[in-house]
Length: 88
Image 1 (cartoon, rainbow, N blue to C red):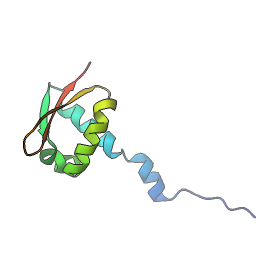
Image 2 (image 1 turned 30 degrees about the horizontal axis):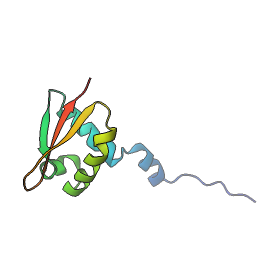
Image 3 (image 1 turned 60 degrees about the horizontal axis):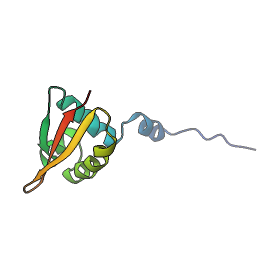
């Protein structure tokens, strides 16, 4: 006798939900549509639904992998400021 395993609702939801990295990249693309954007992680954390620490870690990843964005660590004064610019 064999059993067929059905994916649970939580399994389906996790494949439909964008990852934290995708969510942040989408947010940055939308905000940078009109030109360059400067921000500190702690000021966008609530809008993205991530902690400032999570955003900082993801920005390092996105710097090398985000399509359509140029990401630069701009300055550090009490927190890192990031510069985002859309690429064509």
